[in-house]
Image 1 (cartoon, helix red, strand yellow):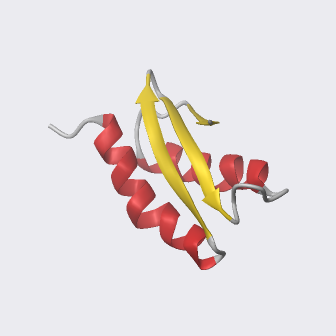
Image 2 (cartoon, rainbow, N blue to C red):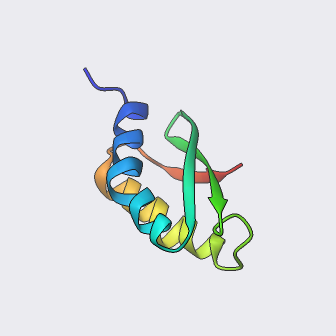
Length: 76
C-alpha cells in the first residue's frame, strides 16, 4: 500500500517540481505528518516575493486535489 508521503512525493516530482524548475526554482519535501505537508522552496523560489502565493495557490491546491488527506502545506 502506498503511503501518503509516497503519494505526495510522486505528485511533487511529476506535477509541481517541473513547473517550478521552469522558473529557476524547485521544491524539497521535508515530511508529512497528520495531513500537514512540510516543504522547502529552493532556487529562485526561496526568496521570491510570490512564494507565499505559490505555496497556497499552486503547491497546496495541487496536493489537496491529488492526494486525499492533505490538509495544509507548511513552508520550513
